[in-house]
Amino acid sequence: MMLLAHLSAPLSMLLSVGWVPFLGPLLIWLFYKDKSAAVRTASAGAFNFNLTLAIISVGLWISVFLTLFIGLVWAIPGWIALVVIQLWCHIKGALRAADGRVYDYPFQLRLLS
Image (cartoon, rainbow, N blue to C red; front, top):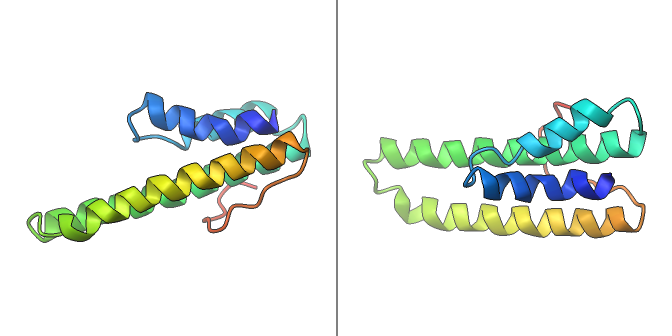
């Protein structure tokens, strides 16, 4: 189930066209938080990480609109970097989960634990 906690974020990102990548880990956390500490930690980490990236993405959108679309110059590379970082970290987390180890995401606002 730890593996699913890490892979649910890219799956929900794909199904929602990038808008709610934190939904999959949140659902796993809600249903399995009392059953396994490892699954709770993995899904909370994935949720926190994806929520942090979503906040950064919203900040990029705000900068685009405030600068009358001139902000696309830095927003497009920023969004590409966010997707690459997101996929890299989730794949790394899934590989660690397959080995039975807990992966700690590199940066996150810790809302769930």
